[in-house]
Length: 153
Image 1 (tube, one colour):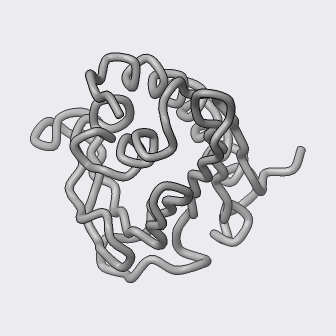
Image 2 (cartoon, rainbow, N blue to C red; image 1 turned 180 degrees about the horizontal axis):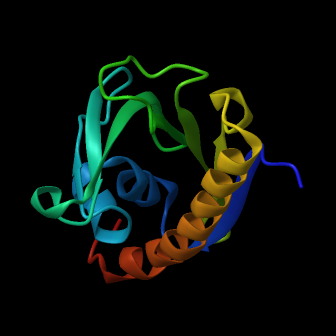
C-alpha cells in the first residue's frame, strides 16, 4: 500500500462561498472537526486545533494556514512540532479544493506529506491509517452541518 496521499470528495448542498467559510473559519471548523480551533484564516497565520479537552489530556495540534483563496481553495499544514515553523518534512498538508457543481459544491480534500515525515514504516502506516479513519469520520459531518446553517444568498 502507498501511504502518500489521502483524497476524499464530498458533495455539499451549498455555494462554494458558504463551504469555504465552513472549511476555513475556526468557528465553523470546530462544529464538524476539532473540539476547538484557534487561528486566523489568512496565509501564514499559526494557531492550533484541539481534539478532546485541552485541560484533560486532549490533543493540541499546531496548525498553520498556507493558502486562503475564497471561494476556491483553503490549505493548511498541521501536526508539526509546536516549536517549529510548519514546512514540508515536519508537517502534513491538507488542501480543500471547492468546485461549483449543480446547485452546490464539490469539495475535494487532499492530505499529503506522510512519506516526507521520515517516519519508520510502522509509524508511517499507523499515522496514515489514523488519518484515513479520522477523515472518514469527520468529513461526512461537514454537509449535515452546512445544512443546519440558515444562510441564504
